[in-house]
Amino acid sequence: MRTPNHSRFALLACVALILALPIPVSGASDIPMIDAHSQVDNGVSMERVLSLMNEAGISRSILSSLRGPRKTPEIVATATLHPDRIVPSIGMKGKGLFNGDPVNLARLRRMGAIPIFGAISEAMVCHHQKGNKAPEIIRDLDAPEVHEALAIALKRRWPFVIHIEFGYSKCRNGSYMKDLERLLARHPDHPVALTHMGQLGPIEVRRLIESHRNIYFLTSHANPVRSARSNEPWTNLFTGDVLAPEWRELFLRHQDRFVLAFDNVYDDDWGDLYLRQVRLFKTAFKDLPADVAHAVAHRNAERLWRLPPLSAAETPGAAGGNVGTPAAAGAIDRRQSNGPTTNEPEALPVNVKDLLGRLVASGYKSETTVDGRRRGEPHNAVDIRGKVGDDVLAAADGHVTFAGDTPRGLAIFIAHGQYLDGFRYFTSYVHNAENLVKKGDSVKRGQVIAHLGDSGSKTVPHVHFQVNKGPPRQQTRNEGNTDVDPRLYWHAEKVCFDPDVRYPARPLRFTLPVRCEK
Image (cartoon, rainbow, N blue to C red; front, side, top):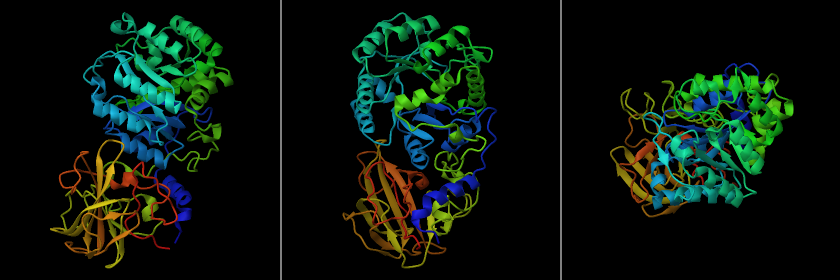
């Protein structure tokens, strides 16, 4: 039986075996690449994101949630497991932000103080409506949410990324260029980046670069693969599969001002469209001097966001590279995505099942349960088998909101406070043989709160461990709240409770609610 001290290295090895890495695109070993700005819609799983990054040869991605806080916990959870691959970015597209709602502005400030975030996404200033997916946004650089985003970027020393589409008449004909230049002049030592190249041409880009030492340009959507799918006036950096002469000259002269980015967002972005764009840039980089290609592909992002430097050996799928080691482990256990990918009964991550020796009897949303329900009924928790009388532990600090009998057996509910997305989180421990705490008790992570049993269950003794989230003001039992996948909230380094570890209060992470075998 392995001890928890070996869990991280064994986890990475096991995960690499479970998720076979796809064959990378041609040229993946030539140069490391960082996608400095992409987003994840609710319909896109982090499993798919990591798989596509492996296939494309993208070493690292700075990712935010498209719709404010809803996807953020999954991005943060994945970044906790894969800090070398995913840099979580604070999303700026929650609808409440664009009307100056104080609650959403306060949430933005709270997120700005959370250490795990490594970037803040684009401040939406002037945006043309894109079909029925993306509405028109007309704000100014003094809007409350823009002001808050700038304050966070300044405090955390992150580039301040702005979305202004100068190709759109309302953006071009307004005062946006003057306002942008005033901002650049007001903060001459702080980097300001325009996503989508600002939809600007080479003459205007050159003028801005030569006038302001702190202006940068993200290459997202600035290629023919993108422009062929849209009537939007995106900047096109290419002639054929190489940079157009006027853009090549700018890249050569000002290699430190251009940052590779793709801005994937929706379901159809995270697929072949992504791979085709990566291939195009890989081909273009081969036509540039090595120092220029490396600067645009990854070094500028490393410098601006203060990221650990990459090397060619860290490119996913690189020949002779170290895929599956801490520096390049991009595979994620397929069972950690939202919802089941198979009907097999395992549910917890491989480090719980294979390294801790606990037999997991059922999976979150799996068709197979041990709770006496028929196949096909959704299961909103993970079940961990044990012996009657085994200790059941609190998975994190909190206070007991319920301890007593229910139709499903003896149960305990613990409230853990408010998380970064503004919701309050609860855990449930059901089928106990005996409860050892009462309503109102404060508990610490690892504290024995019950003895494992089979009360209310028709099968083997086990603890039914459930995670729920609810509105900020709901502080009692978790009934009526939304269940969420517990597997997204395991503490990455110490899944089993370790009394010698001081666990951070934020972001919220749970340890296994049973003892680890030695």
